[in-house]
Every structure is written in C-alpha cells, then in structure tokens.
Length: 315
Image 1 (tube, rainbow, N blue to C red):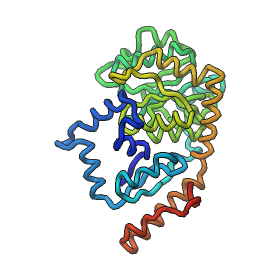
Image 2 (image 1 turned 90 degrees about the horizontal axis):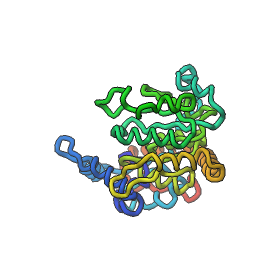
Image 3 (image 1 turned 30 degrees about the vertical axis):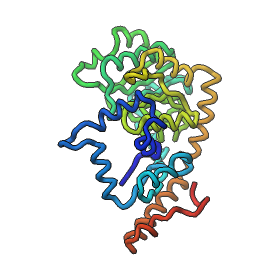
Image 4 (image 1 turned 180 degrees about the vertical axis):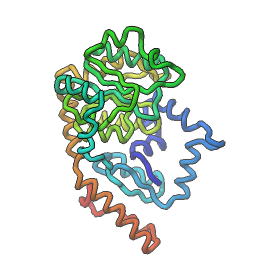
C-alpha cells in the first residue's frame, strides 16, 4: 500500500493534533463521499487491512517526529521510499512556452508562481478573492489558473483585474510547464496547495512556500512545512475554511517582499533544497525498497523482509 506522508497518516488517526479544523472539515467531506456506495475512507481501511506492508513517500529524516509513529498506528511494517524528486534537468525544457518567455522579462527572484494542482478547483468566489489578494500584495505573479467549471474564462477574474495588474502579472488558463517555471531564476516563491509532488518540486529549486492547503494530505503537509519554516500558510476562517484577499496578500508579502521574513524563509528553503536534491540519498531508499521486495518474494516472510535499517544507515 502506497501512502503520501507520515503527517497524513498520523493526522488521520489523531486529526486535532496536526490539522486545523478548517482543513479537516474540507478533507472529511471528500472522505465521506460515496464512490459506488463506498467512501474513500472505507476503501483506505479495507486496503490497509488486506495489505502486507505500507510504503511511504518520505523517510525518518524528513518527518523525524511523525514517521516513527506510523508503523504502530497502522500495525503494519512501513518502508520509506524517499521523496522521489524529479530530475532538476526537467526544468530546462519548455523554454518556448509563453509563460517561460514572460518570466524571461521579469527581474530575478521577483515572481510568485501560483498553482493549486490538478485536483483543486476553487469556487468562483474564492478564485476572485485569491486574485484580489495577489493584486493587493503588489508582488509580480504567474498564475496557473484552473477553471472551476461552468464559468467562461473571460468571467473568472474580477472586473478590471487583468488591466490593473498588466505588466506584473500573467494568468494562464492552459497547461503550464511547472518544473520549467519553478526552475526559472525569476521565480522567488511558490503559492501552492501543498500536494506532495508540488512541495517536493518547489523545494527542489529552493523556493519558499505560500501555503493554501485544501484537501486530503495537504493540511498535514503544510503544517510540516511550517515546522521547517520554509514559508507561511494563508490565514483561514476557522469555521468554514475560507480565506480572503487580505490573508493572501499578507502571506505573499511576508514570503516575497518583506526583507526580514523573506530572508528566513528563503534560507530554510535552501536548506531543504539540499535534502530534496540529494539524488544519492533518494536512490538509496529506492534500492533498499527493491531489495526488501526481492527478499520478501524469496522467503515470503514479511517479519524479516521489512525489518528497519540499522541506525544511521539511512536518515
């Protein structure tokens, strides 16, 4: 069974310990939804019951307080897989994309890249609050905007928004080459939903984070990243999980424009970059996983095949 993070597993077993109520309520709505009469939570529990072991896209050094809690909570052996970062060379492609060409014209480190993933579709009201927050913040931005559906692209943004932000902002409603954008020298921060892949990709290039988690494991991952002090979460309404333009603007300014806080977030993001970009580290975890699979296939004994590594062998 493949799991996204230790933070998610620990929070799902003890939600109040990691996930603020506003995020929890959004996540639970989705988890209680029916798919052929079976909720996502039920599917997860049935799969967990029937699996032999769990694999997590993480490792002890990434989640030192949380990773050791997972095996006792699941009552299954747990294998770390590392972070599975993409190759940084992937960011060199797509140089002719319109978004990348626009970045070529911007000052170094001045642009916040905004992308909320393929699963998150904000309602129209929140899309417009996010837009007004970016305008209010005053930072340059590149926004990969997904249409929530049922709304013409021309009606997505607040009236006059594109005119008022012309020259310092670009909104792209089509596909955007995320790795190429994050690798670009003009990008100085990443406003993200905190999906595992997005966080890994952002830190691969040392980008501090403005965090806007919406569903599933995103809240626990955002809390984990705040603990590493690589960025700041957008303030949320504790009752319904909504956010407003002022919360967006405040977080963007702190990460992008305010010298003292930006310096702290950037320095810590660069520290995490050294871990995320450590190719040998993550390849050792993959090699270990393959060896354990082979061992399990050979002897069929999960108690020996998935014993933890010697202390200090992998961190």
